[in-house]
Image 1 (tube, helix red, strand yellow):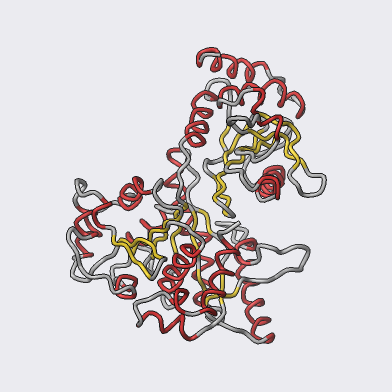
Image 2 (cartoon, rainbow, N blue to C red; image 1 turned 135 degrees about the vertical axis):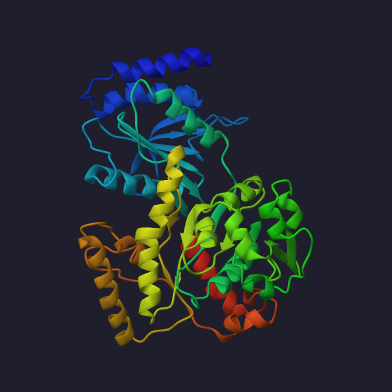
Length: 444
């Protein structure tokens, strides 16, 4: 079937679909034509695909056939999961229907039989949204888009291009407005830990203070990151330094104190870093950006360039908790709004974690009381109502599971900033702590 025929079939399907179409009609009339448009043949689709979690099944799973592996025969290793709803189910953002299907597709994407899945689609033939999965991380790849017979080709093309041209890297900004929460230590040791799992990782030191560059004792070289940001003709690959420790390592884009960062801040736009990193996103599994404190051009640029934001917090520091809340409910949505100009969703916050601390039960109770106040204040704010709960308690259910991941305190982790070597490469206990962190947030 040529593209013109596929296009017209999709337009006609949406135009002719009854306004009150039930889920079966959405599937038979619309979804079948959408799958054709996306390039999946009949034998590359499995309806009611078993997720491996009890009797739960996702409405459709898609994967291109491989040699001696016809998907609707082997029914293994799906690439795309699709969950459908009737047209009368409200899928506008923040509606009850949207929240339910959002949880549903994310649950399916992490299910045992769906570990290979890289994309999730939700639609009721009035709205459609694409989600991307990178190992354990699931984030929206588009906003939830309203569709009709006039715009469906453009929107379906956008979704097809993202699926066909999937970027390899997950880009993570490590950020908190508050200083002293261990952003640099977290960045270095998380990257080093992922390298132990065979992941190819790039670290970007985007803090003008250059603490990460000093941590790893990387010498000055030419051209510098300063030169690369200012001069569009300098290839970003020319400023990357490899860091090696025995048979492990990662790559680094360093900064240097002798650069005039005030001048850089005046000359670059907030999307410059994102554009510079774009050619590297198929070279690495992960790109981590060590972001500065405050909310100015460099921190804004780091968050803008990211898919997700990792937020370390000091557990007994109210300012650190409050700044994390502000980042989640104000700063990240500002960036999302800017990136949505091209129908991109923008970065999302990962749940916060407590960095290098231990608490007694009494201290935990005090922290929970303070967090409860932050959550209630955000929820009741008449000017900007925001649900913070999942960012503090991701496993919360019916008043239980109010646990926040803790990266335990261990002296060699803090002192490693003076050693020039990531603690996880040298100390078994540090390695265990950071392995628990990457399993919590990244590794499926």
